[in-house]
Length: 368
Image (cartoon, rainbow, N blue to C red; front, top):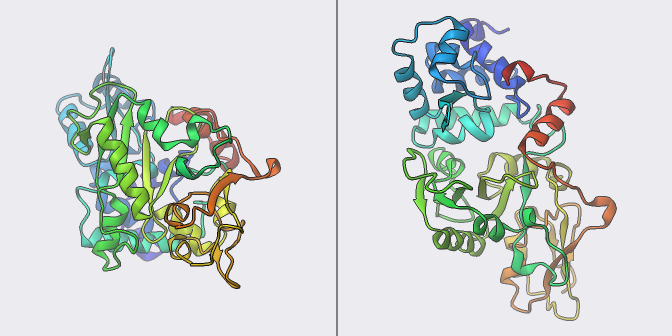
């Protein structure tokens, strides 16, 4: 342990250990950067309390009794922590419950209203130092590319988890928020190279009016959500969502220059190895005129036109479809990958958690 780490209160080490035990993980760095990130987000008292919370959520009474702490003022403290995006809060028939969140997707994304230049620089340092660790080293991946439906070969059978439009249409509440990844890159003077629009994150819910009282998400209509989706496609952003079959609750419209996950993939230069994709781009050689319009749209450098004909590197193509919608000859379509290359995502979030915990060899049972 470095001298700098020794100067950081133990509560932050305990919180880091708790977050690392969650299947999503919280990667360490060789120095104290990972602790300084938590120190920016949490006070020492908040870090201490959060490190002892459960993923399942507890009422104020249950939490006070289990931790043997005074109940007076606890609810107010937890509500402030929720306002700061440190914990999750939800209402049930048994009362309002307060629970632990993963660092990502979770605590980090909820900092978008608090993000400033100091935090942006700190997160940039953390991303660069933590990348070699456990973000991509185990299955299942946290993200799954959701292809643009209109460029998939029409005769193919498409599952609901492979259609962004269906995810939105099947929800009962919709919201929008600014992308913290794009905000962070703006603040370190490296703005998004794909779009100037930062309002691209689309949470949704199967409960009605889910975002009416949200401090983080602006409620919108289904029609507005679909319009945001189409605008993101036209801008060249990549639809991504949780790597599960059912229970989706967001669509991230991502880019490889800002998104924490996609940035890591491009830096490793092997995107397909760390991001499940069941589709791959295909070119109709009779229609392709080698105009290269599509090449600049590919964020993974999977396209090239060496001899007046498009060539696709299938090991770099993630099957997003953003290149195909700008083809003036309609020469590009998404087709299924060979059966031995296709993956079936976990059935739901709990299945994902179980598989991830097993493969990472962590036991989060005491957090449940």
